[in-house]
Image 1 (spheres, helix red, strand yellow):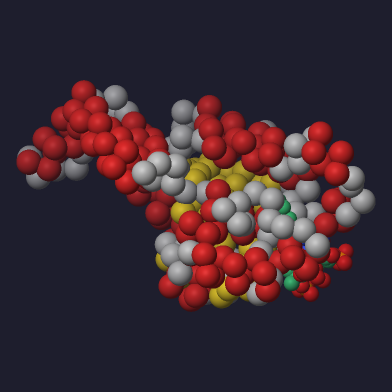
Image 2: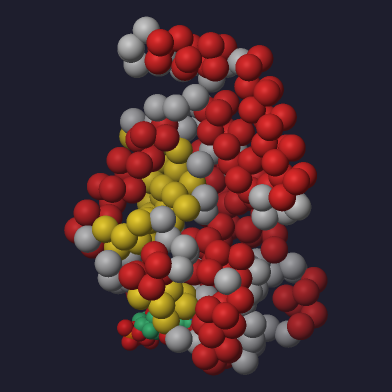
Length: 258
Ligand code: HXC
């Protein structure tokens, strides 16, 4: 499907979704978020896709929600249209792993979009921030909630109250991103990670997502029980038999997502 604000390519079981509003540093307007939700739904339904990478340009992953589009809206309009709530629901429904490959600015909604992905690989030029405070608003899709869980209260308060940007090194040190790579290698690294994931059993990758995501929603003892039950349940799968047999037979596993 052709989009105006995205470029989507599928190769070797990986869907690469590029945000593509270069004139506005990929600012997230209704059209882009709608197209992104649609693209994610399509990748979810496409059996050829086993992992997704979302990226922007070298200068900007996304510089936030589109300020021009939002500026004149009223409370009733944003509340009644559930602004950004509706558009971001598709992320939560995705069972396939999603990697954010971030270069340049990931600000406001851009930082939050990256945090909605399963993990973030950053280029050494990446800059993360929640500068909504400078616009007289607060983060709207996770900048006060996910960011706090990822980097802790002190840094989340600092970022949200001062609006300062965090560079890639600090983001890695703080646990916001999983790894930092040279800008020129960003896509190569992200696609190679996606490729590795695409080779696993999709049954197991979906279970891993459920397990890790549950840790944000529950107590440690409930989470550990949930994890153990998931672990037990995978013994009902053919892929568990295949994975363990392949190890013992010193060969590569042939997973069949069963
Ligand atoms: C609309 C934006 C934009 C945005 C940049 N542009 N960010 N348009 N919404 N969020 C546009 C500029 O208006 C400009 O268009 C063009 O992109 C290039 O931007 P410049 O500012 O000229 O580039 P530069 O000087 O390099 O500065 C880059 C920047 C700056 C530091 C990223 O653009 C910036 O501060 N942007 C806003 C960042 C921000 O406040 N984000 C939070 C948004 S609120 P023209 O037409 O003038 O050339 C938010 C709420 C989240 O995200 C709620 C839930 C989603």
